[in-house]
Length: 161
Image (tube, one colour):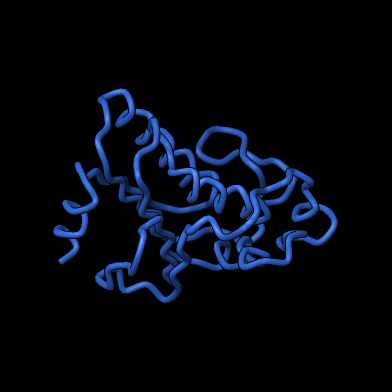
């Protein structure tokens, strides 16, 4: 399954050809840090909203595409909240992956992790993004990853046509 998470306001461009699209629209509660999705009821969030099953959905995706505005070298707050709610894709146990300690994957290895970042950014933010996407890719069990940068949302939309 190809999953797209985006923070667009309005309709999403269709050129991503995703099987499932989740808008990071902020219409859900942020993670409360209870870790029940790890221990009490694995991969299911305590909150009964549109992200209750986000860990399962993200965990079952072979390809994950994230489109986000640059926010100081990281995901937009709306995307970050969504990703925080998906911590149940892993377990509390640890293992070595990519030469570093990571949590054990609940759903196994996946294919590709692509991040499209739009908006102005500094060289330092670009470096932060590259490290962030590499580490997120390893942490979530993706075999390959890539981050692409666009100076504006309009530039990204034009590239997708």
